[in-house]
Image 1: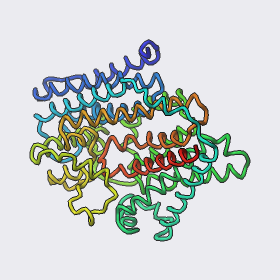
Image 2: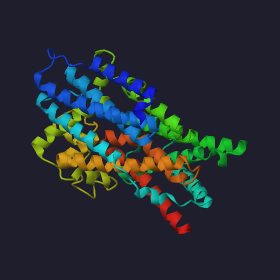
Image 3: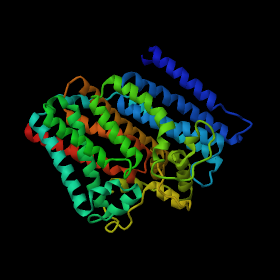
Image 4: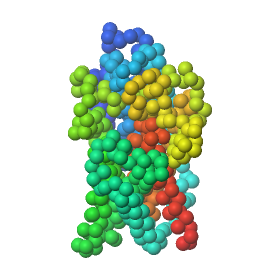
Length: 452
């Protein structure tokens, strides 16, 4: 058992001690209505932390990334915000909704834990066949061709310097670059994903591809180009971090030790570094410093408040009965064809509260609750947990089988970088890259079957 490992047991004790010290419940400074909510979220935190250390000790990649997001954005940040009664967005927060929000988080935590712990044997039967070298070489060429063609189409319509614009300027400049904003987004996302997939695959199999100075320069240029189109100037910080993480894991070939140290470092990164990555680009009003965890009060950590706002939205408008998830899945359909196409859940909830800034997140529990209530939270969390478990089983299998089936592994590593984006939401605004990954994977499956 991982709990018997001294270093992880010591680290767990230290984290619990710090948590109890920093977030100790002061009954004199809190509304009594908040006390049950804090007890509930503290219980959920303990379960999440236990599952997180299980992932660290075993080097489980995607589950570990899931729990880091879950712990920081849906546990530590909410406790700080509830205790200080300061929330990221300027909207009224009903203290009575803290308890149901914390209960939703607890339910999500329990369902994720069950989904991760239940055995999954079906995937093991699909890992028995090898992939021909011809298909793998074809994959690299196809990704490079697709990425360069997409990049060339963007450059011909604008210039290469468009990738050096700020994020808002980039969205304006490329919004109607092609037929519609949705199609423009597909072309840009395809360019990023294809070049990143090519770079990651080369790094995973560098012993095969990099043989002389010419190939070193060529494939190093592909890695640099993949980073350039995913740079943090015209992209969100999480998108850039996702690309760097995928390349980093590919270079390290997803070793167990690498994953252990990576997961341990992500927690402090989210709390102390992530909010400040945007300082070079924007100069907005920041929350007055309230101590070492004051960064958890800025709009980057609006996930819990958005869950509160989602409950308010459901109380007033009712459940959406699947409209939001359907809109996310069919994101590529232009609004001109689908006149009743729903907008992202984050902006939808923000508009209901008459907020001026509507580019807000919508974490997984909020996306599930706005559609189907608590049953949606149970279904969504269990479905996500099972998918992540399958991906982690594949990663573990790939570690013991050299370079076999490295194409799906490449796509999983890219997904691991984007996982925080998907969990944070809003889903309609970030699901495009994942759909492109799915299309690439299905194309690979078709090519593999045709070769058998």
